Amino acid sequence: MPTLQSRKLLPTLGTPRLSNLSYGLLFSALITLTCHLTQAQAQAFPSKPIRIVVPFPAGGATDALARVLADKLSPRLGQPVLVDNKPGAGGNLGTDLVAKAPPDGHTVVLGLTGSMLTNQFLFDKMPYDPRKDLSLVSLIAVAPIVLVANPSLPPNTGPELVAYVKANKGKLTYGSWGAGSAAHMAGAYMSQTQNADMTHVPYKGEAPMIQDLMGGQINMAYSSLLVAKPQIDAGKLKAIGVTGERRMSAMPNVPTLSEQGLKDDTYRVTGWLAMAAPAGTPRAIVLKISDEIRQACQLADVQARIAAMGFETRCSTPDEFAAIYARDLPVWENLAKQSGARLE
Image 1 (cartoon, rainbow, N blue to C red):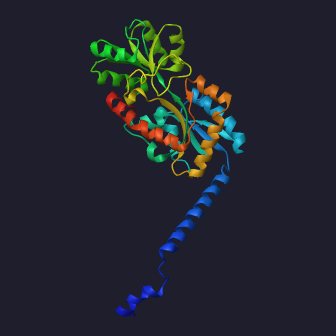
Image 2 (cartoon, rainbow, N blue to C red):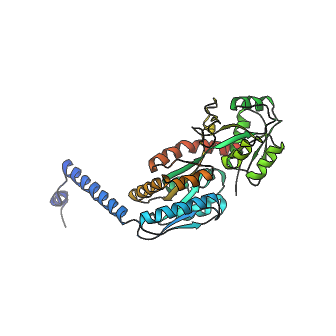
Image 3 (cartoon, helix red, strand yellow):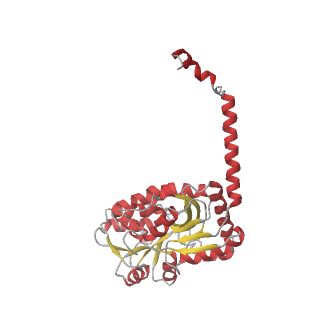
């Protein structure tokens, strides 16, 4: 058995300590090896068919765009790109399937703001954490919402409307296409910040909401461009303004609420359509998918499909998308809390 003195010497008899220079060389070698491995992963991708999960029913706008993208991506990637509809729970069912899929880039989700961001603040139980379980690939399109009013309502601008609801406490109504929708949260925000005590009238969809707005049963509402624009053009609705940071190309004469002086973050946020992969997907693969998406977004028929949805093309890099996500997250969280909406 070694003596105490000999045991003290044992460490000096093994592998010599690495110098700072040696550690630096070893670290550089590991970084180089990692880069080579990552590049090899990207070059090998895809090695089998890619599945785009759409967490909404077939036949909808998101499904239609997914199929257009699949047609463009398949020949570029050299593998079949398949669309798989997994609707349910406000988009949570399909998004959860992707969150739990192998992180190899062969399963991605094409979803909306709800399933990737706002649902976590509206549902009591979420099967996944979008901030931890998804890798953001690309923001594809944004959807500002239009603040519209019945033509009989006196205000014509955002500031005039804010002053009007404040001066008519408890007298006005606003519609939405359902509890927890963007229209509900945005309307509740205006009501609460102006102490207006407006009544929220939820509908089962936008179409009946717009019908009642034109008929004067409700006073105002936030609506999608797709549904509101024909009625605005026909003079049956009054456009007060749009959310977002720039005017919509389909309605260039309608100013943003922000440029009218309503500077709160709520009047700037938009809904969006985006792609994500499971967390842990190698960055090189995420970048490759994102680059292919951006290439597809430059094609005229893809842009036409996005415009037909009432969206505007905004294809981004993963880092650009992450910055937008981080910026919008606290705004939507606050809106959800203020609205008091809860979903099951």
